[in-house]
Image 1 (cartoon, helix red, strand yellow):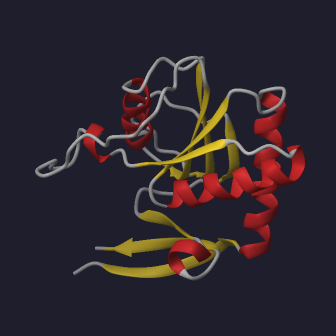
Image 2 (image 1 turned 90 degrees about the horizontal axis):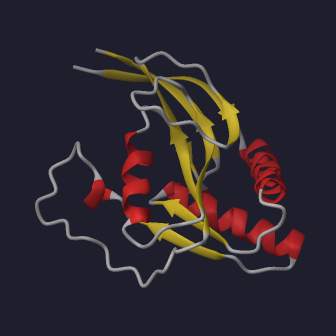
Amino acid sequence: MSIIKLMKTIMDENSITRTLVRMTHEIIEKNKGVDNLVLVGIKTRGETIAQRIAENIKRFEGVDVLTIGFDIRYWRDDIDKTGITKPNYDLDLNHKIVVLIDDVLYKGRTVRAAMDGVMSFGRPQSIQLAVLVDRGHRELPIRADVVGKNVPTSTEESVKVSLQEVDGSNEVIILERND
């Protein structure tokens, strides 16, 4: 029987807010503005983070950027896809700067699936990656362009992001699994 216990809280509501403001500024600076920018939030929490970044961009730049919640299950290579059909998004990502956004970067497989999905909707000018937490342990050669917080972890630990819109609270915690 697996026992999961809370190790520590690594981000609270205020630190998440500050981090997302910084990440927003980094995205704007990296792209010399927001022209041609599309935020693609990987469902579920990546979508919420993308929406918060879009709100920050609106506040800082006065521009509404296209923000998409992207279901990547169809492109996963590690799940049973019985009953999963290709999402039907009305998208043309040709020549766009796509910023993939997720909550936690771990092995890289979710991001690989998201890139495959994005490429099925056109050929972007570039694909960038922004993550709230990078915990290491990559299995694929994927690196985030914008990172909220680097958190060294062991493989026995997991990182849990909770967001008000999805979970009712804002925090990032490390959990330890004892098998």
